[in-house]
Structure formats: C-alpha cells, structure tokens
Length: 295
Image (cartoon, rainbow, N blue to C red; front, side, top):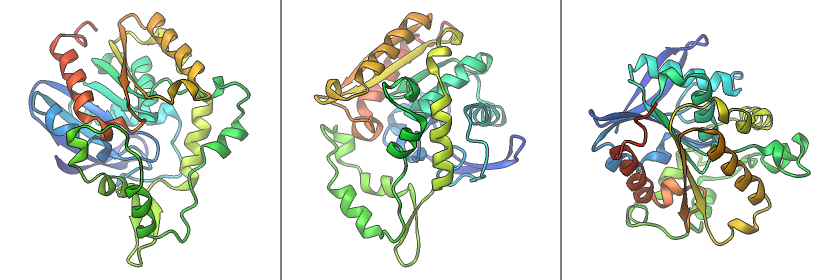
C-alpha cells in the first residue's frame, strides 16, 4: 500500500495519514479500533484490493495522524471520515470498521447515508457500554483505561507480544510479523522507551464518548446494507457482556432493513490480524453477490 498524507481536513485543518491500494471496483474505507492504527488492515489489503479500491486511515489522535486535544466525540470523528471521503473523491464507499471503528461506521451510516454504499462491522459497531448491567462511567474509566507506559521499554513490549496467544491463525497470519504491526501503535525513543501514539488523555476522552454512544438508538436510521461480523470462541458465552452483545445483534437485525450477521468462529477480537483470509473471503463474496447494492 502506498502511504501519503491529507492536509487541511475539517474545521480543525488536521493532517491525516492514509494509504491506498487497488484502483478499480468498489471503494472501501477501512477504520481501525481504539488505540490501534491503519496497519490492523495490513494483512487484509493485498487480497481485498485485487478487486476493490482500498483506503485506510489513521483516525484522529491515532497512528501518524494529527493529535489534537479535542474532537473525540462520534459526531466529529464521523465528520473526519466524510471530509476524507470527499477530498479523496471516493464514490459511495463501503465502510469497514473494527471495534470502536465499527461504532464510527454506525455513526456515519445513520447521519451520512448519501455518502456511503454500506457498512461492515468487524467485531464492533455494537459497543454500548452503558447497557452493561451494574456498569457506570466511573467503572468504565477504570476498566477500560489504557496501561501506564512510563518506563516501559521496547523489549518489554516485544516479550509480551511474542507470548500472546493469537488463537487459531490462518496461513497469512502465521507468516506475518504481528509483533511489528502491534509495535506500530507506539512511539519508541532512541533509548527504547515506549509511548502510545494515542495519548492517555485522548484515550480517556474516547471512553467517555463511548459511554454516551448508543448504537441501538441509531439502528432504525441506518438505511444502507449492513454486514455484521462477530468474533466468537469457546470463552464467548461465559463473557459477562455476552447477553448484552446478543441482544444488540438481535436488535440490529430487526431494525436495520438490510442486515446480516455472521459468526467468525474460533476468533479473537483482533480477528483482522488473526484470520484476514476469512474476513476477505466473506467480504469479497458479499460484494460480488451484490449484498451492498440495494441502497
């Protein structure tokens, strides 16, 4: 993928890092999750770009894009994406959103239907933490707070990443340097000390915005085709949020006129890195069969 920068985006005139691949077919805009960056799509892009035009971006505060102290509400983040779509002259792209990026995709679909063709939610988009029983904003700010990286060295992070259980990986994932991709979420000093590219303050702002974001109240406003890809493994049903998740999936399928849910079996949350072949196969099949055509 060729990487470049966009300048002067939105009223804040921000600079965004983005990458493109492919040159024909449907346009796809890929949105990463919280504290991630556009490299989460690195293993998916080669196959998906054979028949589509792909654009990945580092969202506000993330990766190599600008990091202002404000603008982390969903309205502003969604507007960033729309401004990028306009500047790159993307014609009705399909929005692919992972995790928090899926919630951004839901926000876009419910408020800017004229600019997109459809959305695909990859283990995200249905995050509604205020629905979790006995949850509070104060509790969420503790449970979802990012690690404190002060004094942590690159070698420490590499050891953690190398020992991570990625579950059942496909061949593309097995052959990739996942540690290198994960390290791209950090700035590494000459002395080897790491710092998250998403600042702690901005991370906390996004958690607060997630508390107030209610996808369930937006479903009936979504008129474009919506493909929901849910990661699932042996531990899913024992997760304390499982019942909320199932209820939101059911509500989405009821309220979104053209929607479909597919379970990604034996998958972890970072499924774009674990099973890129599976996501690519499913998405290409639905594009080719016209799932996203009835807008």
